[in-house]
Length: 495
Picture 1 (tube, helix red, strand yellow):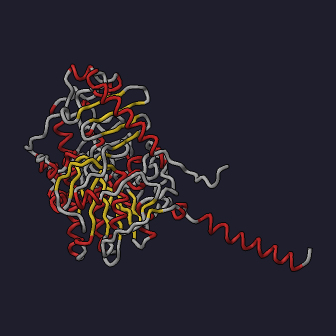
Picture 2: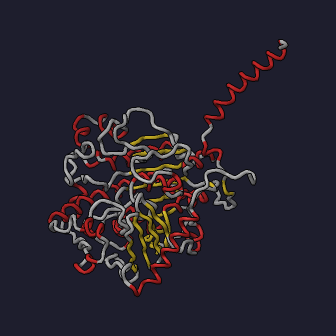
């Protein structure tokens, strides 16, 4: 082989060595195709996405529930829109959050249950905004990675965030919240630590330290500081509150605000309604039916107190935006990953049973271009949030999303959905304005007439007079499952 040929060969190999790592390091989300967006809203708005955990649609006073004390969220509802038929895509923290951020259903992004890491190449809202000039920040609970049995002092995938202050549990780990408490002294560190999951201090108790030391206080304080640092450039910030996730520990300040307040009674099936439920439902719905009113009074008061604690810090964020002169150019979104049964149907926490206590959560949106319409009843889905916010930012929407932009609804009141869809590892659910249908992998199914039975007590799936509706809902679900099937690989030729 001639020397010149050898030299060319070596140079070529060296070039490939340099080229390959740079190509391999390119995140897959940067290689995805996008829908083109023609809509412009002038100056790009800042976007603040706030999530609570276990937060129910009836935990906001302005939604029509006067037993709640949420003055700051009420102001957001007054100045924007609150969707009271907003349905989450999945019932648990990790799959629901993955769907909210990616606008894709669990079967598509792969996080079908807790404990499955969010794929690092899954395109999310912060990736797109970061690529389009936004500074991106994550504060508090994200839960893209399982937090059990991992070192919270170690590195965490950035997932498109320029800044990350993670706290997926309240004071249990040496994470950003734990370090924040440590800086305030040993008394604060001890007060904020509820113990590891399965080894909690108590199910529901008053927070033993200063009110501002709660996880909500950490998220609120650090969110305000983020706003102050970045008020001179377009930013996207996710503020992840742990509240009102159990174990419950509201500050005495907020717990005491509910002293003497009348709470709605628990919603429990009659014996006849109970007998018409599938056997698995009967087992689940009997777990907490016998706990007395004093137990639920204390439990709910702690739960509501944590909501009010988070509401205070949402108000602090809004005030910070006003102080910086950027409130009018900031979109606020407040929502939740899922709800909590809170004793309704004889259950607590969340699971795959399709009751609205878990699947219908708040969605409050306010900001530039969003008319003040107050409470809105149209059906919307968690997968609709990402494309809506990207359109507001005049940023491209990935072609892989399952969601729809809500701007026709926000601007002109035009309906965008005839039904919503949710899924878990063992359940699929369809909801229209009138009916809700769910099918479980064990073969059981339920059908509720939401207009006549808004509390979802009467299972009509065994009722012959509703055979046509049952068949129609089954067919709608099959069509939905077909249309959202995700083709990962593109066909490039006939064979």
